[in-house]
Image (cartoon, rainbow, N blue to C red):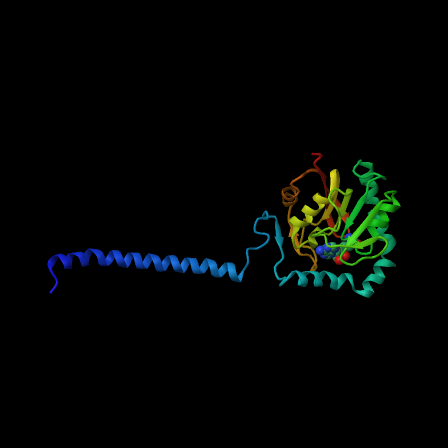
Length: 248
Ligand SMILES: C[S@@+](CC[C@H](N)C(=O)[O-])C[C@H]1O[C@@H](n2cnc3c(N)ncnc32)[C@H](O)[C@@H]1O
């Protein structure tokens, strides 16, 4: 037989124990959910990116991303067209862009220059045509002597190598902040980076990100100042953005 005191203790303690047990189960459930999420879906690499840029989902691995890029760049029929029928039209147009940059004192004959994602090197040929002789391109697929092999997420150059870097392939970057970080690393202090980007609509199926304003670029170019933004008509790209790496 339980005493009155024992009965009273049970009445008070039972709900308290129940409450503790329920809280513990709830805590365990929430912890499991969070851990489960981070195991099955690693923190998105673009988690810290501003909202005006979106990384396209669907690449199962970095190799899958590279293979998609290479799929087009290595296409023999396309390479034939790029190096023959397309060649002069594209070199002429790129040369106009570079002449314009020279007029605005953003590019000089003496500028040591890099074209990022240069494919068969039409933009490098254009730089040479306007007098910027010390120029080279970089792409996943080399095209000697104009284009050497390299991944723009890990440029194969020493820090502070170039006075000028040009690229119209920002949308192909799976890791845009690495793309930008590598440009800032390999540019000399005071060096100029010119990007041609597409803001008004989604880019093609080989793109790895979609950019909706210049703001994310401003945030990613941490060690540079924004010099100019202007509208262009550049092989399907609509905006030219110019940054200058800080002098100190
Ligand atoms: C749209 S094409 C642009 C080619 C060239 N700039 C032009 O306008 O003729 C994109 C190029 O970026 C290159 N590319 C894609 N991902 C790359 C990466 N991670 N590193 C270097 N090049 C890359 C592709 O191989 C391809 O040649």
